Image 1 (cartoon, rainbow, N blue to C red):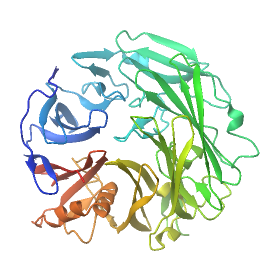
Image 2: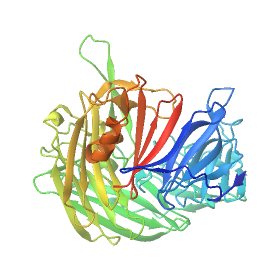
Image 3: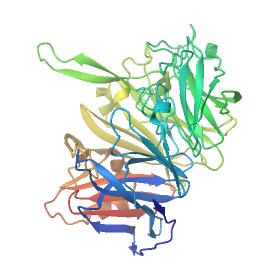
Image 4: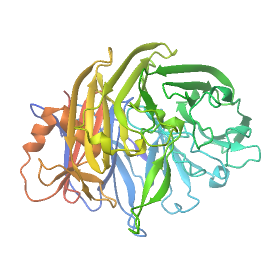
Length: 503
């Protein structure tokens, strides 16, 4: 592997009045665009390319390109031949899978600068990594599915892999009833150590004064780079009007360093769960209409999904966000009648700085939604502000967005856009997949978060309207960042284009 950090400049940017064309290329069968990421600390956009693995038609990553906000294009990594790349929170290291050993017991390699290390896969077995959530490009913790032993995309830093076991050294952890042990695996040596975790005070989370749930107590974790990690728990009062997010920081020997509570209260409104990444999802099938023969899956959520949080990378401020109802539920995961959204801002010590509680204007479409798990809720950094977005494609299809001032919590702009989810394009693997039609832009399809970009930024919409309809379907994906809106455009066959709208 050869790493060249910002040393080969390919000078491809074209400056337009409203946006910068960061990159434009034709597809090459030997070098297919495969994946893209934004690294917020280093503020670079990464594009992975590769060729098809002859055995199963998957894409082998062979090189990664980087782009800055001015369009400077560089070779970030080359001479690779790996399957998938997951970056650590530090953005200094990443993990990949050996393409020849990616079955039920894959072999992993870790890369840090010019150094790579294969970790003995046997030492990784029977450890639960899924409690360490993964991260989106805005430093938001996204809880991983609780599948146990394989998914550790969020469970490594530059030196170690982390996970949990019970007292019997099994990955099946029971937070309430058993002791829990932190497992640490040094990447360079494959040396494993085990430490008993000091549990949080569970009496703060469960009892007669708290909301009912069919789930056992749960938690999720977030690595703070190479220094320590946070264990996140939440409580919800019986009247659904008070919730507390507990952020307990631990060292890597399982000892508590500090506990910071973040308390949120609502008057005459009720906290409800949503698909916000704050907790893992569970699915349950329910029969359709009598005699129809159809079943449908709906998402079951526990108290962790009452909200989620965005942590400011510079000063540690915490923004907690979610949705609320004007009707009292009787259980956390039961029917919910969505009325609006909230964002609460705290400093890193738990002192509330402001709260922003707002109704969602969606032409009464929310009346059709009964389960919060069907609502995709996000809070993203957008230039120097925040953007809150809620999307749904269940009985009705829309994205509602609001730009929120970071300093005051005031809503600067709201927008609502309908789309057609009856045609979800490219559900199979493609450079951009799972996009939806928008009737005002013929032969152009978008991800849900791209609808937010269209609705809040007129320059994005004007650019899209200016693309001549050639009869070919185009696909669009969006990344919001503190540098602006990154728009990725492709026909998934012949070309791709990357643009940045800076304001």
